[in-house]
Image (tube, rainbow, N blue to C red; front, side, top):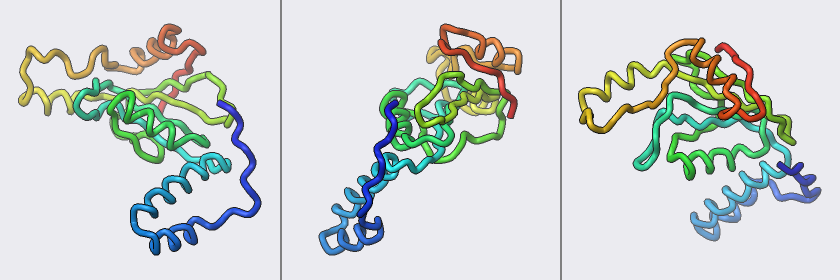
Length: 171
């Protein structure tokens, strides 16, 4: 990632922009709001976001983990990639903590000093709930899902998954 450019010195306040947009129409406000969000990313405003791979739309392949990025200037890009590449559920903030087994903190370095963690979940409740509604020929809902901390530790140590390495973390 490249370092973000310095913010312009004479920048209009986002509320002023939306007030102007109201006079031009609601479609313009959506556009200006989107530009303001992206401008916030470039101006160095840091945010957290997550990509929950357990819950995907049609065409997505569910996985028993959620990836979070903490203190990044690229939260909106992260969320866009989540939706586009994985058809997964993206949202602001960290991953949900309920039912986490353990996680892997990625050792890769980012220009904005953000931290990325993959949290692995006990998804037995999702599997049980879906079991009565699925055809057995559909295959498993979650391939290779971890069942214990030792499974997550093996995943963190897997250099084919985490080329730069990953450290086991507990919730």
